[in-house]
Structure formats: structure tokens, C-alpha cells
Length: 246
Image (cartoon, rainbow, N blue to C red; front, side, top):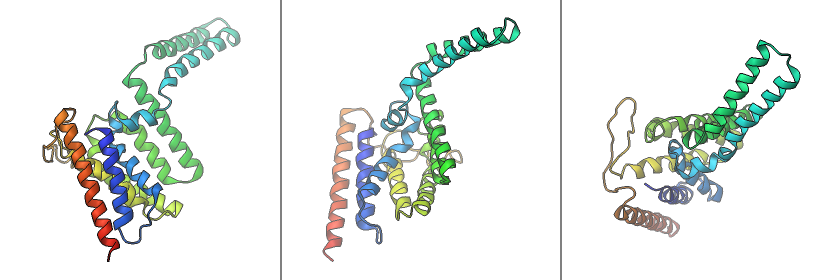
């Protein structure tokens, strides 16, 4: 399913959580979190919306390698005397330069997301927020898994919900776990409507489960995604209105 459809379904799920779950305040931030969470499973896909957004450093990774090469080469030239150490330093500089020059496409994206995730881990350690470090670990590892594998499982959804639970405890923001978990699960349920299905219990079971209604990327599939989003929105709105009337 397309990223725009996942985002729409996640946001609608956020509205459902805010409007239908007792004790959960209606929160635009919570609804936005549900939308964000609905995109999270596709961090394993190079073309996903969230993968591109979180990999904000992607365009700079290559130049970072080249910069390191230049710094090491300058250090070798001006600080080291001729000999084995200097030759080794020049070799390291050359290696970094070649890697940076050759790096492109998916490898750059993965390194950018790894960098983003590790920075988030460090931020969590510095602030004492375990949930932030766990979020960083997810961002770092997800790009290195194959599409619709480990991020598209019941265990990943449980881990994401637990991160929300820890954030709830740290920030005192009631309902974080429900917004986060609801958005994440909405992605898996939506992908279960595609022909590829979802391996909910991987690696315990390798079978793809779902109802093969949507052919992703086809005109009929795109139209059906719009119909599903609209129908879901109407259903949620009707339930909220009926609840307000009683």
C-alpha cells in the first residue's frame, strides 16, 4: 500500500483513539503520532516517505567520508614523518575517499538512517529517556532488514507500543502507547489487504497472512486504497458522532 494511504489510515486511527477510547484526551499531537507510527514499518523500504524524511543526512554522508579522507591526508602530510605510519594514514585516507566517491543510492540511505538513529540513541542516553534510545535503535536497524520482514511483525508492533508506554511514563502524556501502537498496527492491517500479505509471526512462521484485495501500484489498487480510506474515515466519524449523542 502507498505511503499516503498508510499516513491517512494512521491519522484516522489516531482520531479513533482520541474520540472513542475512554480517558484519552483529543490530542492533535497524539493523532500526528499515530500517523508517524503508521509510516514506521516501512523504514525497511528505500522509497518510503519516513525513510526519506528521517534520512535527512543522506545527501551529506558521502561528503562526510570525503571530508574525513581530506582531514586524514592533511594530518599525514603535515604531522607525520615519512615512514610506515604515514603510508598507513594515506592508505586510510584513500579508502575513505574511494568509499565516499562510490557511495550512492540505498547504501547512502542506510548509513544516513544509521547516523540518525545513533544520534537519537545518544540523545536518549544523555537525557535518561530509555524510550528515546529504543526509538533510535529501531531507526538504526530497520533499514538493514528486507522489506516486509521483521518490521512487519506482531513483535515489532509490540516493541513500538512498549516504546510508547515508556514515553508515557517519562513524559506523563497519557495515551502515547495507544496512539503509537494503533498507528503501527494499522499499517500491518492495511498491508494485509495487499496480495503480498504480511508475515505477522516471522520468524516463528514464514507464511504471509491477509486478504489479497489490493494490487499495489495498479490503478485499480490505488482507487481501492482511496475507497478504503474514505470508508474508514466515515465509519470512525459515525462512531464518534453516535458516542457524542449518548
